[in-house]
Length: 229
Image 1 (cartoon, rainbow, N blue to C red):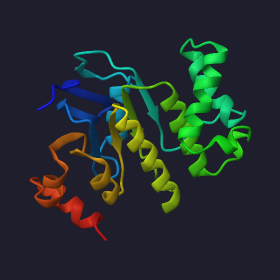
Image 2 (image 1 turned 180 degrees about the vertical axis):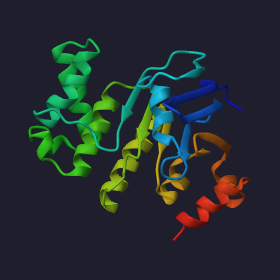
Image 3 (image 1 turned 90 degrees about the vertical axis):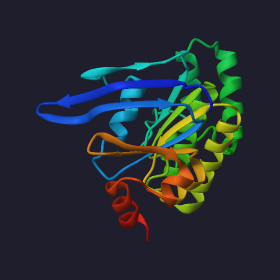
Image 4 (image 1 turned 180 degrees about the horizontal axis):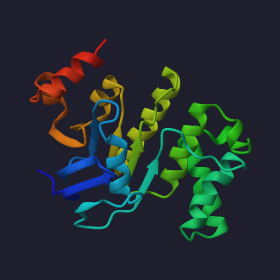
């Protein structure tokens, strides 16, 4: 088994009297982990805690080796400029020179199949194109860990296939993938392992085939029954 790239110990997040994340302990070693669970289970919150966008109320994250990270959201934020400039901006923030930023941005857009829209205003692109620009922006930074929160929600099948292709290529380059999705078919295709969370608690962490064929918790069994057409 691969060594863990992240150990989570007793992680919690409380807002008022509500426990959003409740004593989560995980050891993440798989290259591609998909977090599943019903609406409101705490999936997105858990990803934001891991990425450092939220501060936990308790517990800790232990990174055996610090990983460079990128995160892509369900609704990506696009600057009021071109698709190319959106990718360049992220590189400049990380300290790359103007020439290097432009070179890497163009290469990332080409790999994402978007070189033909590089000069178009990013905010006028379709939802699928914007999501691919966001992925290109993350890819250009060569992250060791890419965190994805519902990356294909509301996208049509063709756009979903393109997003999955890009994620697959990023993973093929060696990046670890941590993502949430409501698309069970996508989870089967994209995951090495499943983490199932319900009401802020992790109930299962298991290889993808075992989760879908033999879920151990009643909550996971119910979730699969309700989500399967």
